[in-house]
Image 1 (cartoon, one colour):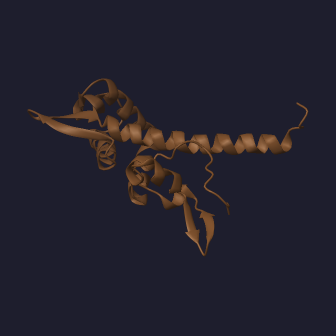
Image 2 (cartoon, helix red, strand yellow; image 1 turned 60 degrees about the vertical axis):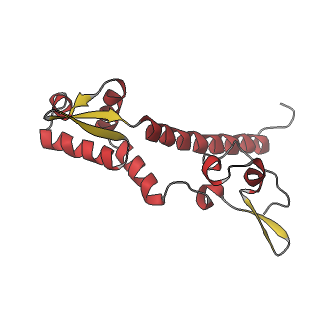
Image 3 (tube, rainbow, N blue to C red; image 1 turned 90 degrees about the horizontal axis):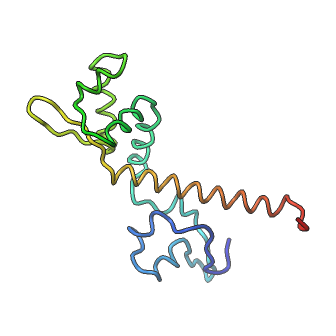
Length: 155
């Protein structure tokens, strides 16, 4: 438990949506209960996206083929047929990978005649990147704190 409004780490990726003003940001991870300040685990308490939405994003990114499809669609809009030609799997299998990415909101399909063109949803991909950066900053801070405890003071 913390006794004051001191914060550790960088800004939370949830701040912009849940705490639009600076005062709210300072109070975001603190709550007063029975006259005492309690610090909540802001990774658990404050979420812009639902647990299921985050799980969908990271499940989609867990597969190497889907990451490759996403990488290819970053630079150009390809049809599902063009994507399927690049992999040693059936068209239906590639189509299923594309569907998983689409459900996670990482790509969008749009009709171009008889073809379905695949393009990356850059905002959603950026959101996943922000979350990973946020968790990385927490772990870097924790490792630095561990260094402070374990390394000799005269260093």
